[in-house]
Structures are given as structure tokens and as C-alpha cells.
Amino acid sequence: MPMVGPETADQARLLRLLRDDGPRSRVELTDLLGLPRARFAAEVDRLTALGLVESAGPAASRGGRRSSLLRIGAQVRFGAVLVGGGTLRVALTDGELNPLARHDEPVDVRLGPDVVVGRMVELLGKLRVEAGLTSLTGVGVALPAPVEVRDGTPVSPPALPGWHRFPVRDTLAAELGCPVQVDNDANAMALGERHAGTGRPFDDFLAVKLGDAVGCGLVLAGSLYRGAASGAGDIGHLQLSEDGPLCGCGNNGCVEAYCGDAALVREAVTAARAGRSTVLADRLAAAGTLAVDDVAAAATEGDPAAQTIVRDAARRLGQVLVGLVSFVNPAIVIIGGAPAGIGPVLLAEIRGVVYRRSTPLATGSLPIVLSDLGDTAALIGAAHLVSTQTYAAR
Image (cartoon, rainbow, N blue to C red; front, side):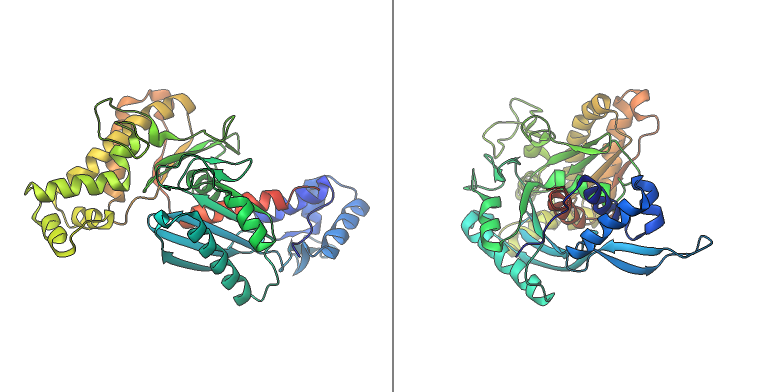
């Protein structure tokens, strides 16, 4: 059976404190919650009985009687799923969202949601059994797609053909017997960065996610901002040019059509066939096709054509960020999802455009950095999605 959640608002606040900050002493928690000691003790006793909280040994002495540490219970375990870049990633986290186990494998999303979601169920079940659990507390899923968060379904997703309105949340919940939450991968990345990454010290930041789909997660005033219909941050389909390349969404000149993985591969194939890159031409001849990793490897090796492709894409992305930075005025911009090796080239070009064209007030002290969590950010963020539901008062 799925684990019971907190029963009062104070219990929920306590669980979120332990999730976000790790084990804390009873004295610290009593002060932070502003509760009378007797009331605090009663709430902790109830959470302990529910299996949501447990003792973590003695706290450091502050003089007088030593307090004890509290932490999230050891049976609280979340599943996290990330789809994208031709890979299905599944992880298991503890109640503080620390990854405990992980499995990655190739996936072809064109096989359809029944096949891919079925494989999610199998892999989550495998991780659960290996951890000795009878059930998962909850599962969070991050998709490279616009997601209607209220019902957990992707909506007209160019990167997931055939997935429109598939009930990902309800299908997984029925199969796994636990709560499930679904969101797009950029929002999940933003939550992961806020919880455990570069974004942790900041209340206002942008998390830009590259890859097969391009998106942006917005953290404003310390919370993820989704907009009125869960559509905030969908920058991948902002139009940069009316006569630009065809995008997977059916329009021309979208950001994704210039900066997504498929766009980089398209330009690389063109360069190889036009004789502008012997490196890419050799790879194309050997494999019959190119992947984004081929573009990244060629750029890293110093191939001028591949580096030009990367710089052109970064410049387009920088043009979009100029508007976002001026409009939102974030404290930091975090970029994730860049293929291995091309991050520095990408970052230098983006910074050049943004710092040159944005207002001094918006960029005077604005860092633009690469994520140091990689795809782990979105997995942690996916677990965060469902933990927020789990740690809410019933």
C-alpha cells in the first residue's frame, strides 16, 4: 500500500524542512516551526507512527541536554523518470531526494506511449525490488513535451509523436499503486537545480534545457512558475524567422528548429555533404547517419564547420535569452542538456550575445552558467514533483 501522508499543515511543513535541508535537531525544528514543545512532540510522534520520520541519532551539543536529530523515514522512496535524447532514465531517491540507484537505456519514443510507459513500469519495479521495498511512495516523470500538469498528459508534443493526451500519470499510478506527477523536463530541471544544484541560493532564475526539445523552467520568488495553463517557459516554439527551417511543431523558424538536437544534426549532414567538413563526412560515410554526439565530438576536436554549427545555434539561443533576461531579470541563468564537450563554446557565444544586447541593469551581475548536475537535475526535479504532493497535508 502507498504510504500515508501528513495529516496537518505543521506535519507537512516539518517534512518539507527535512526534505530540503536534511536531518535537523528537534530543537532547531521546534524553533523553525514556532510550535510549543508539547505540540511539536505530538506531531513528530504521529509522523513516526506513519513511518514518515525517524531518529537519526544525537545532534551536536549546544549546551545542556543534547537534542536528537530527525530525518525522513527510510521507507520513503521516490521513483523518478526522465525521457529524452533517445534515452529512458529511471532513478530511485530517498525522502530527501538523494539519488540511490539509477538505470539508463536507449529508447525510441516513436514506438508510442504504451510501449515506453510499460517499460517505465518494468524498470521502476526492478529498482523497487532491488531496494527491498513493497511499494514506492510516489513517482515523478519528466517529459520533453508541453504537459497539462492537472491531468498529467502531454499536449501536442513534437518530440513525442503519438503521445498527445496519453494519460501518462493515470496509467503509471494504476500500474504502480502510488501517486504519480508528470511535468515537462525543463520544469523538472529547474526544480532539481533549486533543490540540489546551482540554483539553490537563488529565488529567481531561469533553467534553460537543451536537447531534442528546448524549454525553460522559471523559478520566481522561490517557486516554480507554470503559468495559467502549465505553458510558461515553452521557448522552443518562439518564432525567430518566418522563413526559417521547418520545426517539428509544423511552423517555420522556431527556436527548436535552430537550436534543438535535430537542428544540429541537420546542419551537420548538410556540411558533410557539401564538403565543408571531412570529419563529419567521414562519420556520415561510416555510419550512414549522424547524431548530435557526432557534432559535439567534431566540434571538440576543433572541426571548424562543427564549431560554426554550435556557435550559430548558441547565437540564436542568446537572442531569445536577451528578451527573457530583460523581461524576468533573473539572478542567474543555468543551461543544461548541452552535448558533452561543447558547453564552453556554447556558453561563450550565449554570454557574448546576452551581455552585449541586454540592459546593464538586467545583466550587471548576471551569471550565465552550465548546470553541474547534468541530467541528474531533471531526475531530482521529477522526484521533487511528487514529493511536494506527498508532503502536503491531507
